[in-house]
Amino acid sequence: MARGTPPLWTQHPTLDNLINGISRQHIGTYFFNSLVVATATMVLSVLVAGSAGYALAHVEFRGRRVVFGLTVVGVLIPTQALVLLLFEIFRAMHMLYHYAALVLPVAANPVGILLVQAYMRGIPTELLDAARIDGAGGCWCVCGRSRSWRLASRLGFG
Image 1 (tube, rainbow, N blue to C red):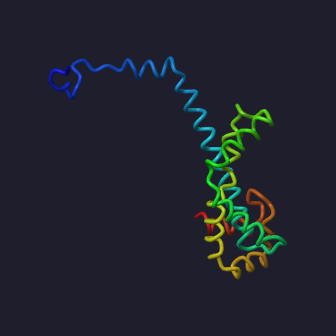
Image 2: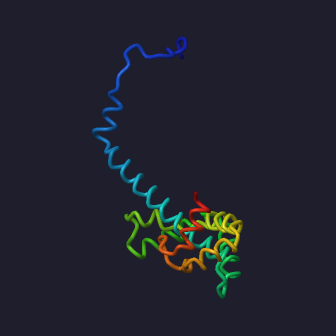
Image 3: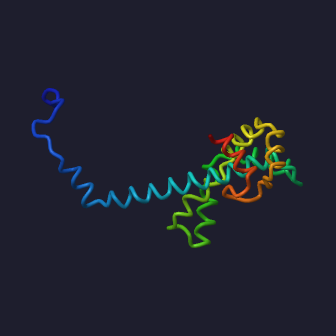
């Protein structure tokens, strides 16, 4: 049986649990792992979604409608349905304890690709044509070597 209500504030505050968590429980390692995975995921997602979105919006290639359709279908498949399949794939490749097993499944996020593609469609093709006339190349160079990609990425991502 409880006697009364417990106090709202403790009588003797201490930071022992915080010090224990930082010193003995390897919080620094966990923070570093989270930082590496979050940074790699963000960079790879922006590169993949930006490149794919630009290609789907402004580059005519064979199979473009098929790629767009597969991207839309990818949005409809819930990530939870793929977890066991991804586990088996990474286990067969002996990659269960690698950062890549956390980063690669979310790198080509179909929602991100469709969002970038929809935004890139708003960039006038005349503007990109003018950039090409001024000497810009195609978008097939990754990491911004193409002036056309740099123009689209500056207009698309600020």
